[in-house]
Length: 430
Image 1: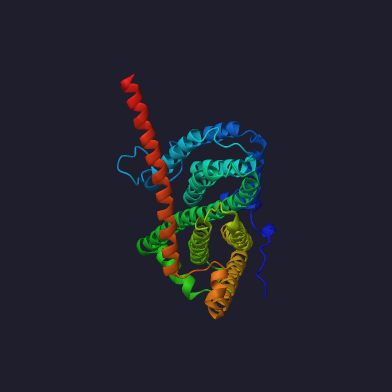
Image 2: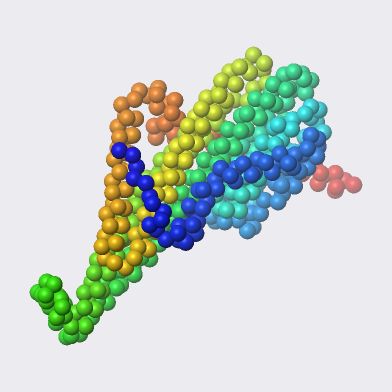
């Protein structure tokens, strides 16, 4: 049985198109394509000009007006830093590019295009508050500038062309990883938004139930109406109800349906949390794989490097399909919530919407149980090929690539500090 399809005609079209997550999900691949095309248009076949362009774009990253959380904007790995780790990495990368100007004698436009694309994605991540995407782009740029751009074998043209071609393909995998990270960030933001809406709705319903209870308890007319509704609830008796009884019955029915709606939205929210957890685990596993591919200049190791890149491509291509499936599921869930909240006032219409929403949740849960069972029946080697790691393996991999990123950033920072001290010394002497 396939997943039930959501008929968008049955939901409020205005609410559907204005949902921020749905709109973002629909344009995900288009934005990645636009960033790449923009980078290609901006890059010219002049290495020094491209360095200047990348430096300008890095300096244009606006941390002051970023939507990143305060914890990220205040995170510092060194006591003497006057800015957060992300901004400090940008400064170190800029310094490295300035230092290496005119040192490269061959055409590296393919690499510069990828680096500029990553810079543009970094800008967007900082602006929109996408934490994982910002860190992924930072890691990619540190590696691209510090380990790829500075290790081009200028004195061996044939090897240099091979090095540029293969590392451009490697940076393509980082670009895909940043896109994956952005999906994880947006799912998290959407879950947080849904949680806030759920809390507000629950508080409103709890308050209305309390107010109704007080009304029935303190107002004799509504106390009698409450009794009559329960004792004389037949079609013949309903025709004789007073205005208080009819009004009270409408209020009670509406509250009951709101509670049904709230309970189903709670279950849909739990499904989104499960998707978030799966996305985060997959992202961490993929980042560990991409970050730990060694950059080589030895021609004898180039074939092995190509094999590693090919494996990354297979993993990330498969994950990209999974991302689309996950976003489709999220979009279905959003549609069900909109449908439930915006259905016509007729009681039966709202009941049908509630029943359909519950059916979707059950189908998603059933499919996930099947997938989970299939994964458990596979061998560890198969799971590793899928990029799925145990918690212990994932923790170890994460610690390894974070230590490597820290080492590279520290190396760049020390170079920056030393040159600043030398410049200050020369100024004092003069």
